[in-house]
Image 1 (tube, rainbow, N blue to C red):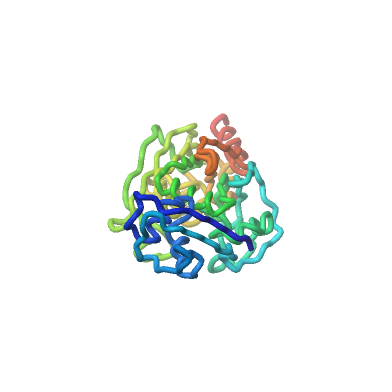
Image 2: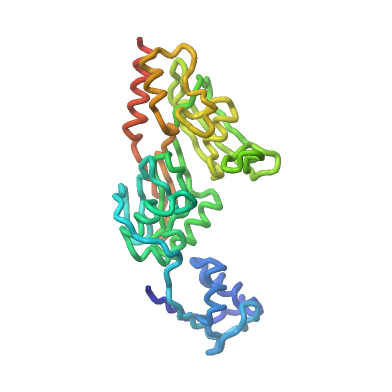
Length: 316
């Protein structure tokens, strides 16, 4: 548990604003909901008095914020190894392995990335979701950013919503794509299978861009860039255009084995038990300096082995 103490004076341009609005302008590094919770808890005093978040402030009002940053979620730290690519006072960049769930939920109450992060840095228990601002599916590998402070968390969530964090993936998909393209539609819950996502008429806008890295006889190695970040977006979109990701157990439609594939490659594909999808690049403005930073995570061994097998098959 740590303390946060802030003091300021209301400037002329914020006179007449609601207390929560004025503080959101003065402290943009903290979210409006977080500031509202401080006001409701009595941790914000105006001229040494507690007032309501809707009350107006006047020029010259003296603001004092004294609050304790308590644990946000009641999750346990667990000793799970992490592949740390970069860390500083504001962010942690990790390379997530296959099989690691990002956040506890139904069927996965522990042994998640969140539990591992709490073990790596116990101060993360004061930050929502231990600083996790975006997810990767359990069997998707690759790069993620974690916020290490409340200020960094607010900043990165805002940049993610404004699409100023660039996320790039590589995938092996079924069938041969001859050129790149973009997929733009709406996505939401599947109307029948509620654990799945689907292209729908009433969902949220979803945009995925892709280009060909290499064409194989029956498969294609793609570079994929997200413009939006819907749940299972790449997996749903590639399935929607009839080129599902190799090994995808949910959206693959049992189409991983293509006609004309020889027995050795058939066995390799059949034994590839996860979607061949890897988040290999992440570019973001640093929460403290604002400087653009780019991080890469090399393809994991299983996807590299799959590419080697596809090359061998084509040369046979």
